[in-house]
Image (cartoon, rainbow, N blue to C red; front, side, top):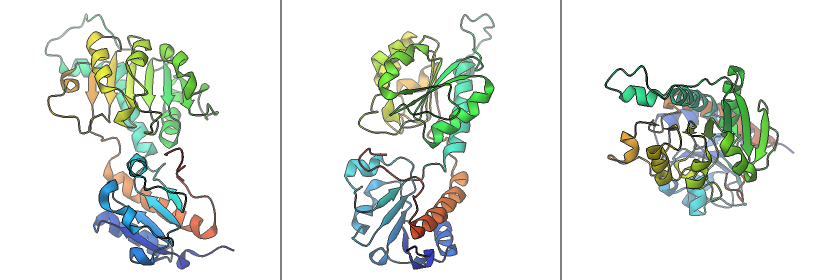
Length: 313
């Protein structure tokens, strides 16, 4: 038997701000009721901070928790996620904006814009020249919503796309698909590496000293996932010695990147401060996701962005 959203009691919190107001309006537009946590059967959690008390809101009556964040490692690390209820992340609502930003970082790296932007003299005869995206091999590590959108952007521009997933499954738009266990053979082929994988114990420092050394000297490394996917010290060394071409990073480890860190002054590094997903674009998409998942939850359907508690993403 299915329910109507009107039968669902929802707590939206913990903030009381513009975001909360918009999400509450979205919830009530379905007919669902806004209630206090102890009366709720579902929670829409708007804080990106795991320490803001979500664990204290959970009780046996909570059947579903919707998180605002796409990455759930904060709650995984705290042990908050469990098998007692459905957990969903905001995967998909960030895909288009982050993919656009990724394309900008890729092209900036290929065209050597980090070096040119820092130049203080005209050096038309510089030995290193920019490269074309067309014909380049783009390795996309992680083919969730963002990774798939990146593939959709670059494939029509003539890039050869290699998709890497945990299982090696077929990914629409990719020319080749491999499992994460096969990455060792793929690094030497990569003109561009796009890191779009979740942050888990298995992906920590996925790109370390040996992997960076295996890349071509002209390779562009783009990270729009989590800073923990790259060994930062190894990256600093690789850029300083010229074993890779450019690093274009929207995320870093540590984050925020401290003032005075070597990456700020490294001529072949381009840093954007976790800015790939502008706030005004997020809110209406989050509201639409909440409404859709409320209907799915009421009807007993599979929810969008469902978290695999055991895999950690």
